Every structure is written in structure tokens, then in C-alpha cells.
Image 1: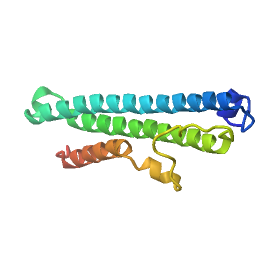
Image 2: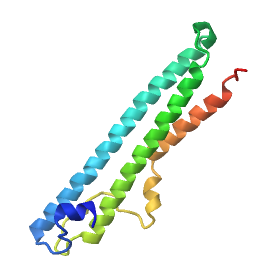
Image 3: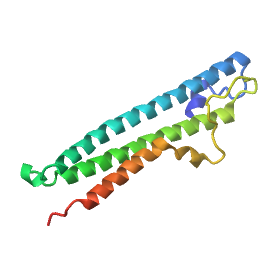
Image 4: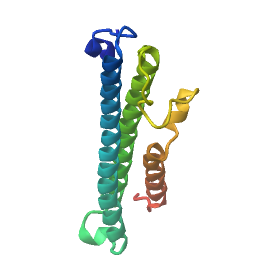
Length: 157
């Protein structure tokens, strides 16, 4: 039994019209929550990565050795990679949760429900397609930039 089945008491398709609409509204609210979580995670990704790129850029205007911290550029790069990786995990978790909600709705949509869909973009026939989104690629691209910057740093022997 899924989490949603527990929440709805396993109503499945045994509901009247108004209960079906309430169930659809509940699923919509859960999907809206996941959308808000994605927005928050992208905001944190942007804020942290912006600060780290700024710090890295400021170090480029000075010799890091002259301020006594020659390893700081590497630390910043590794920090940026870490933030990107954690963001990928969080955004992937939101995609999984959204897919689970949509699959549950498709499997348990009451026969009496005659309202609109619970989301504007229906779940594609190939579920992996829902992971191929701009917001899921953003931390991958940023992480790639950090890798390039890390590789271009002069090696300290």
C-alpha cells in the first residue's frame, strides 16, 4: 500500500463525485508542493553557486598565494561541485515524488471523476523523459563548469 493509499484510506475508485474532486484537489496540492520545493532548491542552488563563483572570480584577480591560502581555489571548486551534486539529488527526489503522485493518480483516479487533469503536463509514456528538464540539467552544467575550472588550476607540487 502506498503513502497516498494510506492517506485516502484506500478509496481507489469507490468514491462519489464530490469525494473524487476532493481527492483530485489533494493530489493537485501535493504536486504544487513538489513544484514549490523545486523552486526553493533552484533558489538555493543559484545563491550558493553565485557566491562560490564570485569568490572564485575574486581570487582570480589576486595571487591566492599572496593572501596565504594557496588551496582556496581548489576548496571553492570542490564546494561548488558538492553543492551541484546535492542539488541533483534533491531535484531528482522531487521528480521521483512527482512521478509517484501522477502514477498513483492514474491508477486510482475514481471512475466518477469528471474534472480536469491534476497537472498541466501529463506523465509521458517513458517516465525517464520527466527527468530531462532544464532545472535538472542546471546543476549538471554548473558541476561541469567547476570540473573544468578545477582542471585548469595550476597544480601545486
